[in-house]
Length: 347
Image 1 (cartoon, one colour):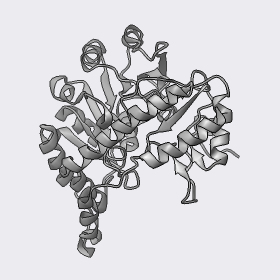
Image 2 (image 1 turned 90 degrees about the horizontal axis):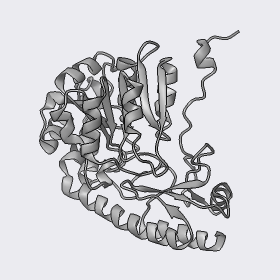
Image 3 (image 1 turned 120 degrees about the vertical axis):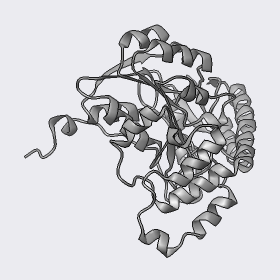
Image 4 (image 1 turned 30 degrees about the horizontal axis):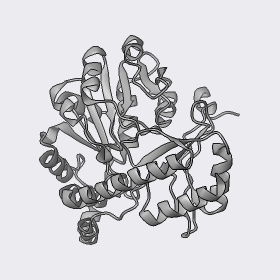
């Protein structure tokens, strides 16, 4: 007897990157920040009282909304909090898409988009990126989505679409343009101003990458008050807890610390790109905290397995356009050196 809806029975769920139990693994497969969060975050967590845990948190995470508004130069009512960005993506799909409303995105990109769309039985149009991950502008507009996702910088390529090009796309599409900026803290520019300038732009961000809070799960979105009000209708009543609100607020307030870590990652990204290129890899220009590195011989899959045997984890996607590549998170200098030393033996 089948208990689930037919399309759920047939669904292949999202497969997260491997989380090893061993502590001696060089973990470069899930794009975590290699550096710890701000000391202010730990202070905020330690200061949580029993009274705060006894009560429900603010349903909108107001302390964080104000902190984000102050840092980003927007109004608090333009900010919505989420239990990680995936929670916000889920809200967006539930609010805008479905069997009668098309969801559009360029591909290959973050694979969770397809899973969330399938859960809602949404109409979906995937539009192929160009050979060097150029934006398929005209095809995205022609697809006429109720909502269009653009991961920028894109995952897994790390490539970036210039802000003015994104603004042009937002003006052309009839629906909502959701700019997924999960990795934008490592980029040279961002699309945040478009959330204030254009009524159909929603910018989503996470504190998992730039602020080293992947274990805490906190994300936020910025858009017009009208867009935020609609998303509130489909969010869980208390989707962010008291501890995560305090931690995220402290992280957002400590911009100096965060920016220092971003610069360290950018520096290692450039070094790693040069070293991999010297080993014969083709590496796309990245504006994220990871690299997509392609190689023909040995195969990417065999390299992935060989690295794993040496307790070095990178990400391998066995799917068209990606099966000749490895996605490699930028780690600390020590972690990157361990990766490079292994690759010099294997390539």
